[in-house]
Length: 255
Image 1 (cartoon, rainbow, N blue to C red):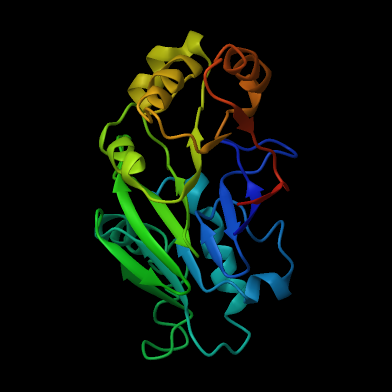
Image 2: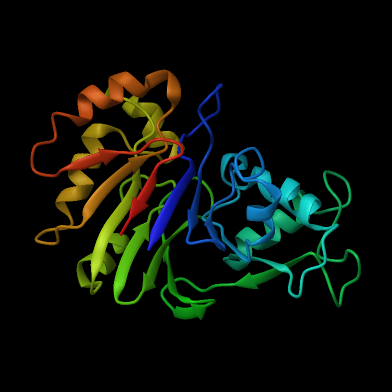
């Protein structure tokens, strides 16, 4: 399983892109950054986008991707996968013919550019070549993470979240778990803001990772606010019982 980091930050500055991971050639986890990184050939290969939640830094480039691929003939639409509430939010507030054209009806409702596919947390589904399971998380809006399994190897992508329990219960039971992608958005000095906005700091991350117990997947950290990147790096280095990889835009991770 090859994972290309198109963007891994919690806000945008020059050379810091918002969250999106390309799994293989045709699956995205979130869509904060796509069209500024992938050329048209790569964009046309994308078949599925798994959406953790509807915040703009995780969905913004869906609109531009839909517009780009609209003018190329494809045998099947771009499928947006998410919970019922998340997909309804995206349809109502983005693809609403006000903010952006409703590409679920363009060129027509029988052969649209975009279609929506609902996923239920806790239920495993085969989507494309992957087995996928959504996990409820604790954020300020409806949010899930995803367990993605291919050829017996599993990776968990945790969307934005504060402290949670269910995700770790499932992680401990996940066979073939090789990696966990987890956010840490703010430094410990902003712990109060992190708690109010449903994010982690290095201190709360350390507590969350203890919930993995004996499981030893690789840990990949993302969603840092760029302005606090160096402070967060320093605070993360104090976590001694886990090897934590802080990822960068453009990185390719092989699982």
